[in-house]
Amino acid sequence: MQVLLGFRIATSGTASLFDIDVREAIARQRIGYLPELTYYYKFLTAEELLRSTRKSSKSPAQKVKSGLMHCLSWSRWKMSARPIKSYSKGMQQRVGLAQALINNPDLLILDEPTSGLDPLGRMKVREIIQRLKNEGKTVFFSSHELGEVETVCDRVAIIHRGELKVEGRVSDLILKYQTDLERSF
Image: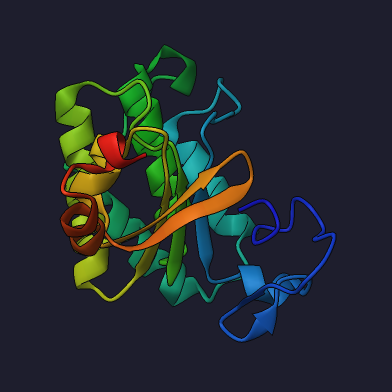
């Protein structure tokens, strides 16, 4: 994930996104990213954060506007005038998702997006992922919660201590191991 996002340089091999080497910045312009631990300027409101994200984007204005409208429609939530630091964990996750979606990306990378969320928040994240799948977007979902992965994902790759242990369609793996992903791990 860190190589795809340009946070680390690969020590060997190659990586590409949309047939472009990930070392080129243009390869990452079609990506939205929600890190496990979000950090915002806590004195900003959600609207201020999203506006600054939009302004710093190199995406065409129409694509960004479409992304912002998309974010507001799925959230069904009015952006508060309160600073982000006063938001609950779930609200901060929503802001992070909105920020990741603001450019209407073709690939969305989510690192532990349901961590710390209540059941309603988890359900909302699942709805968002399903909508994006229905729109033909690719969602790369990283999580230690294999039950959640099983619920959300079509395909999985299980990596343990840096080694790929298994990969394939969730339904095929469940059938092969005759159990859920957690037990098969």
